[in-house]
Length: 68
Image 1 (cartoon, rainbow, N blue to C red):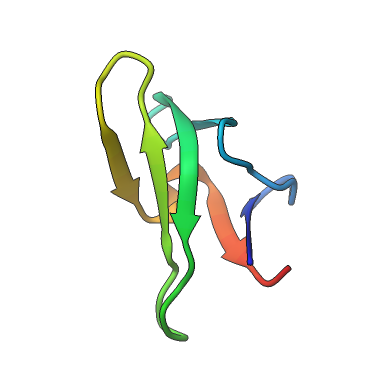
Image 2 (image 1 turned 90 degrees about the horizontal axis):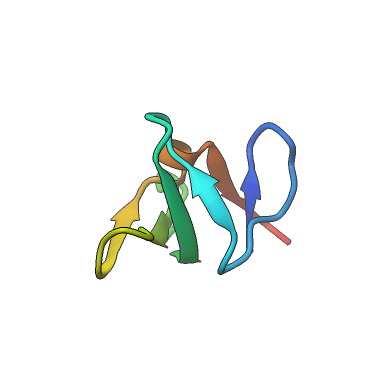
């Protein structure tokens, strides 16, 4: 499985910057693959101006998790 940008189809790797639908910039920390066919999985991100990480649906960042 890999995390990709839904529009460009380019792979997103840990350490890459991603932009959410509000225009906020985050740093990809990794992802969790979907657990079943109805799941989209989750993306883990950190923010340059905040401590800790957060977990979101990949679509928040215009991303999706696909088979390698």
